Image (cartoon, rainbow, N blue to C red; front, side, top):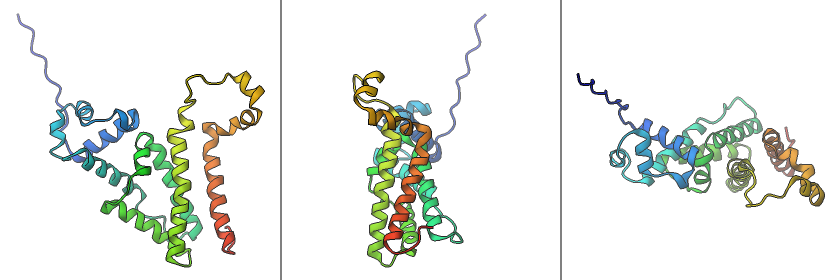
Length: 219
C-alpha cells in the first residue's frame, strides 16, 4: 500500500502589502547588506521574478518601504496642543519608528525622501515648524538642525552602541577602569535603559535653547 502523497503547503497569495511587510522584517532582521529579491522570494515561498510583477526593481521596492515608514508620521500631532508640545511629540514618534526599524534606518536616514507620500510627511513637519518661526528661512534651518539631532540619535541607537563593541579585541573591564576612568564612569548612562532619558534630555535642551535664543520661554 502506497503512502498518501503529502499535501503541499499553500502559501498566501502575493500582495504589495505582504511583500512590503516581509521585506521590512527581513531587512530589520538581517540588515540591508543581507537583503536581496532572491532572499525575499525565499522568505515568501516564491521565485524572485514573481516579486518583479509588483516592484519592477529593487529601487521601486525601497521607495515603497520609504512610503510605508513616511505614512507612520502622518497626520501631525493635533493642532489643539501647544506648538512646542506638538513638535516634541513628533520627535518622540520619529524615534519610536526608527527603533522599530533598526535594519532599515540607515537607508532611511541617508535617502532623499522625494516620493509624493514622503514629501507629504516632510511638508507636514516643515509646516508645523513654520507655525513657531518668524520666516521660511528660520523654519528651514530649524528643520535641518533638528534633523541632524534626530538622525544622529537614530543612527547611534540602531547601529552604534546598540551593537556593542565593534573592535576585534575589546579592552578588558579592569583595564578600562584603570586607564579610562571617565569612560567607565559614564558607562551606566550609555546602557539601553538610559537611552530614552538621554534622548529626551537632548531634545528638550535643543528646543529650549532655540526658544531661549529667540527670547521665548522654553515651555
